[in-house]
Length: 259
Ligand SMILES: [Zn+2]
Image (cartoon, rainbow, N blue to C red; front, side, top):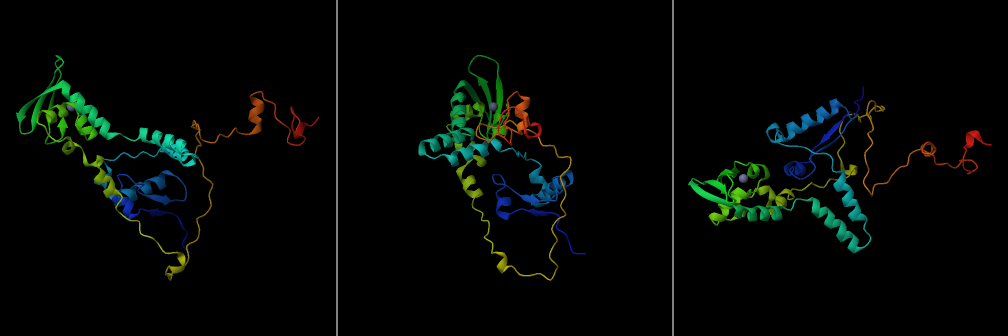
């Protein structure tokens, strides 16, 4: 019995090391089933370590961004390309602007130093709102500091009071060095099959062809630039539009019921 190809799991080391940004892995499987998904995710857990992965949220729908990239790529003149690129920039997080906004809002709060990097922050607007900030732990009781990775307006009031450098309180994932670090790993070039060494084993047989079952094709609202398929001609007649006969090209009948 010769072995038959079933699945292959590929996780390039460079992508694995930079997995905060880059696509991590891909696989070729016999069919998209619960079992093959489970297999892929178990491999991923083995590969990256369960501890690392348990805190991650994976989002697979990059359709909108993909379409915007295509719009920019298809632009035939510079002004159009610049316009499309601006659209893309608007959906990436503008971290500096967000930090500036929080910094300005920090003026509306009064910070009282309590010792050991802890502060009590009260509203200067006369209401009773009050929060506790720990600059050492990068925490505020409003929780925005912890959730976003940059100081909230309450933490900003403490930073302003003590004339500290905001940059020291912004999570390193927002820094340019992190971005550069992420792309430093190299996907090593590979020789062609002419230089591959032969094994003593038999060639692997291709997978058995099987028709996918139980996989529903969901319709999705297409964005403006995506090609639209008007469906079969019979749909036109259902909406009241007359279709041309494919045989004589006259309107109002088809090849089957020729007058
Ligand atoms: Zn806060």
